[in-house]
Length: 176
Image (cartoon, rainbow, N blue to C red; front, side, top):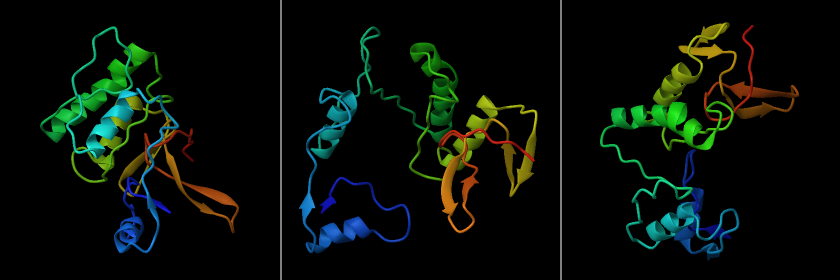
């Protein structure tokens, strides 16, 4: 069974999309919310989009807690500046979160002004600008205190491979 609202494949092929289009597989639409409250603005916004409606993107009143904010930016440069301000100032000030340990930045692409490559560099400069130890490899700076994402394991060698991707997950690393 496949969920028609599942995100598309990130690698080659469109396995789920092809399966859904083929009519060879049973298809379901998940309609019950398990992770957030049904009144969550994340949920109501997602349901509006799935229904083909424009969601309510208005800012909430200052004293009303919410789990969804829409912050418009017309150009990638504006979006990056806004993301840096959110991560470095606004989220820590409003919610008391540690920007390194408790704030996560997600982007649907690797390239471009708002892609993970440029966002990683900008966020690394903001959150870990002058590390005591660092090493440069493959055109990237690796430093103690960077956030990284583990993307592969080598079970034959009984080790986990940690690929540098700051702000995609958190793991303290040391530079040798």
